[in-house]
Length: 198
Length: 315
Image (tube, rainbow over all chains, first blue to last red; front, side, top):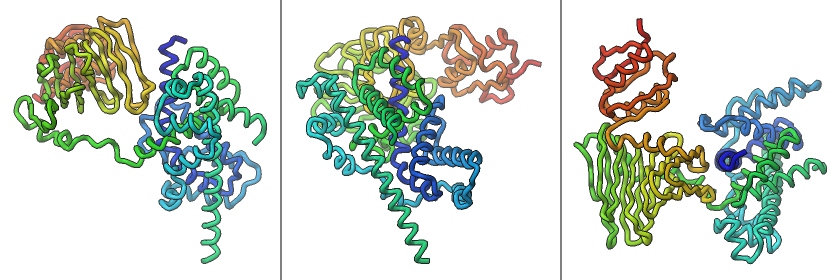
C-alpha cells in the first residue's frame, strides 16, 4: 500500500464516520426503541445495528443516499425479516410490528427529542472520566486541539495522549449504549402505560 | 458482554483513538486490515464506535442543529446575476480600514482576468461567482461557484486563502487554481506550494507542490495525484482560450464545452459516451469539436435545433 492509498483509506473512514455521526447516530436510540417494540432482545438489537453499520461500510459511496435515516431503517427492517424467516419459531406479535414498519415516521418527534445527544449530555459523560483522561478528552473534543498539540501542552508523549483518547472512546461508547438502553426502556414503559389507559 | 466481544470493542476503540491522531501510518493501516479480516462484523463495529466518538463533539452537534451553511443572499440571486451584462464588480460592503469586499461573476463563455490590489492576478473561468476580501493581515477569496486560477504576489504577512465550501487552500507566493465541483473542490498547483484542508476536519491537511492536483470534499481527500505537471497544464488550458483533451471521455469533453458555450453538446448515442478523445480545441468552438468527433468516431451530427448540437448514431 502506498502512502497515498493509506491517506485515502483513512480519509474515507473519517468521512463515513462523520456522515454516520451526523445522519444516523442522533436517531439511534429511537431506532433501538422501535426494534424493542417488536420484541427484539437487547442482544439482537446490538447485532442488527452492527450488521446495518457493516452494510453501510460495504457501499462504494453514500453520496446517493438522500434520506439516510429512512435508508438505515429500511435496511434494519430487511435484515429483521430475513432473521424471522430463518427462525423456526415465529412470534406473531413481531410480524405485526414489522409489517407496520413501512412508515419511517413511526418514530415520533417526541421519541426523538428524548434521545438526542445534546451538548450537555456529552459534557456530562466527559465529566465522569478520570482526571487525566478528562483533561485530554476536553482539549480534544471541546477545544478541538489535535492529539499532537495536547501532547505538547500537557508534556505527555503522543502515545500517552492516544491511550487516554482510547479510554475516552470506550467511555463514550459505553455511556451511549447505556443511555440508549435506558431510553428504549423508558419509551417501552410509556407505551405500556398508554396501552393500559385505553 | 462476552469476553470476545468485549475484546473486539477494546480493539475497535484503540484503532479509533489512533485514527483520531495525526500519525496514522502504513503499518497502522496494515494492522487494522489484519484485524478487520479476522472476524465478521468488525467493519461495522469499528464504524459504530468511530461515529459515536465523532458524534460526541459539542461543536459538531451545533452544526447538525443548524441549517446547511447558508450562502450569502447575494449568491442566491443567480437569475439576477445572469441577467446582468458582462461582468459584475460590485463593492458589496467596504468595512474597516483596508477591508474591502468585492464580488465577481462571469457568464457562460466568459473568462476574465482581474488584477487584485496586492499585485496578485486572478483569472476567473466561465460561469463562476466569487468574493474577494483584502484585509490588513489576510487575503481571502471565496468561490461560490466555478473556478479561478491565482497568480499570487508574495506577501508572507498576509496569507492568501481560497475557500470553496468548507475546503481551504492557502499559499504565500505561488500559482494555483481552485475549482468547485459537484463531487468536491479541486485544487491544482502550477507553481510553488499550497496547503489545503477542510474546516470540517483540520487533520486532513495536505501540502501540494507544483504539478500536483487534489480533489477534496468537506471531510475527505477524495483523490490525490502527483507528477502530472502536464495534466495540470492541460487542465488550465482555458486560461488561453483552449480546451486540451488527452484521453478524456467524450461525455467529459462535452461537459467541458458546455461549460463555456450557450450552444450545448448533447450525446444522443450513449454507445460512444465513454470513448476517449484527444486534441486541442478553441473553447468557443463546439462546432469544430463536433466535426472532429464525427470524423474520428463515426457519429452523425443533428443540428435541427440551433440551440444544441446532437451527436447521434450515424445512419
